[in-house]
Amino acid sequence: MTGEAGMSIRVGMGSGLNISLSPDLYWQWVALCDDSGIDSIWHSEQLLGEVLDPLVLLSALAARTRRLRFGTNAIVAAFHDPIVIAKQFATIDYLAPGRLLPVFGVGNAGDPYWAATGASPGLRGKISNEAITLIRALLEDEQISFHGEHFRYDGPGIWPRPSRPPPLWIGGDSAAAVQRTATHGDGWLGGLVPPDKAAEVVANIKAAAARAGRTIDEDHYGVTVLVRIGSPDDPAVSAMRARLAARLNEIDGAPRADLLAVGDADDLAALFHRHIAAGVHKFVAVPIVTDGADLLAQTELLAAHVLPRVEDRVPA
Image (cartoon, rainbow, N blue to C red):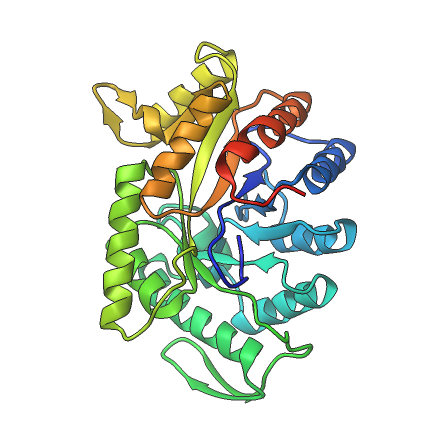
């Protein structure tokens, strides 16, 4: 995404769902993204799931890449000590200034991770709000005095203090997520939401921020989009539709078509542009793929044929 002044439409990528990459394939994919103009790489947090730790990965990306941004989509603040998180953010930013893009979520109350961490799912919203506030203070201020219900800290801010602290974005589309973004966030990254829902959330965040006496940059609104250049009948697409049907709301017995973009480059660009019309300017494209080789192929196609139709970069 961006912390730069001015409006910009950018497309980052997640590494796909339900696929396992060897270290060699992962770094091939990262190099392809870095070389081909992909804006950013995103990793999610699942403490007990079959994914790697996002902040460890972001540290590796900071050392391994030249220009890519990288973010958490999303890290659950209530699982972590905010002082430790602030220190990790500051360290990553030191290695790659201006390229860290943290997004916070509150997690699912039904996940087994709560018992594993000793955190309370019923208090996850309040804990997250306090944690985000404290993390921001630690990254920005030389001396902090924070007395909350869940966290208390009197002492110095984090070193190395970023010259320009990373923007703290918020995930989710509930009423609580809207309010959290408006009062605590620098931006919003939605999950799998259709353009009409994205437009509603963006409008609600802007209204809530105005009531709180805050403003959020116009281009600090983003969504996650499932994409594949190929046929709607591809086995990977059929498997993804079945997965969505099991997890998300259905219309007429099937997942909404505008939760994913499948077809040629124009078909994919059309969904991106519907989101742009809804007020969204940043994207995490998650390719619908079967394996690592398919991920590399889809990334090449996206970079070559979709980014030029969506992003507003001036050609070199």
